[in-house]
Image (cartoon, rainbow, N blue to C red; front, side, top):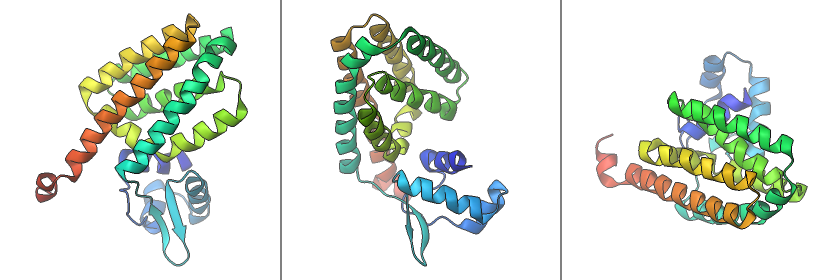
Length: 214
């Protein structure tokens, strides 16, 4: 259930800055308020919502500058992780990543963006985890959670989405061949390309012409 609400925030169904109506959400998800409020606590910890006394839960709004700063942090963390992952990844890690890659590609072929996104995020986290540095994994997971919606938006462009799939093939290939410096550079380019696409989508959504048509 927490994942359902998380996905609603990621997809934009629950818009940034909007107050979450508990009654409507309880009816929509067919749950009671107690588990919903427990989910809210988890999502607040991830930085996705803000809970204030007597005001309820509100979806957090991040500026482009906030997201760009987080992207820089993620690039830095994956840069640290890349060479360590190439060195420390086990054969079991590589098999699991290959299986996730196949499932992610299948979701892309089926046009299932949210399913694709789940596999995508899992792959990135597991590459960082393969560096065998718990502190690195923990910080990466936390920062990644905050900007889920923005990473999701970047793949709404079909051309960018297809290119991202090809980039992931290169990422896995570099990891399998244990070419740490190459893996680092591919991951860096992958993030920057995704953020450029996401920023175009967000700028378009916020443009005056877009506002006038709503």
